[in-house]
Length: 148
Image (cartoon, rainbow, N blue to C red):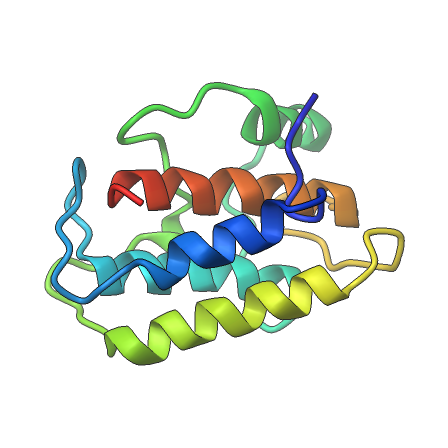
């Protein structure tokens, strides 16, 4: 059974892990700095709140299949990233601002009912349950990348 950000205790646990991040942390794998990682996940969090829209990047594959693979398929180190979520080499962000933004968006997502209407992603329709599953998986992946 998939884990959702909205599941009992999961959202607060993710928030606590985000709180443990500091500006000097290095990734256990990958190239992103901690500020870049936070900016990267903030784009996805903002998309689910309708505050960021990207162009469709996947064509020719059924939307439901792509969504299923992203939500349930394997994610290894270096898993493919949607082009608009790539962070350019050398681009830096204000760590404290990105961290505060992450925590605030997690709070807003958790306050929103999964049964309410949620925006589509760039490539397929999403329900609140889909977004909750994706956010747990995505944020957990990157927190693990930084050892928290």
